[in-house]
Length: 112
Image (cartoon, rainbow, N blue to C red):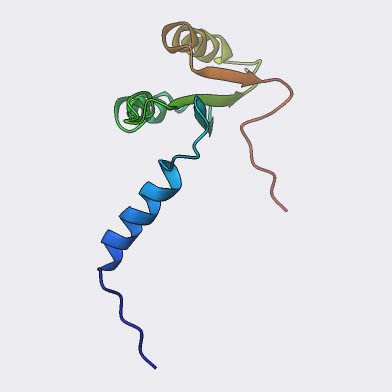
């Protein structure tokens, strides 16, 4: 038995995505939220996202959809050099208003 599709896979995928995302049953004002866990020291990476694909969330073609994003960062550290990082992150927060500080967390991944 061999089943053959009438349309190529990329075209079928696009049709399926369109039906899933933009069907008539979409709730008005549906919010697409992207949460991004980031390190305190990754300003360049956050900036790259802000300048590339994150603006697409604000420009969604369907007026019923709204897109938002936030970067989640670990709690600001205390210690040598922390004042510089603290000041830089706070300036970034003031400028972009897209950072949430998670109290009681660290930038480190547990090993083991």
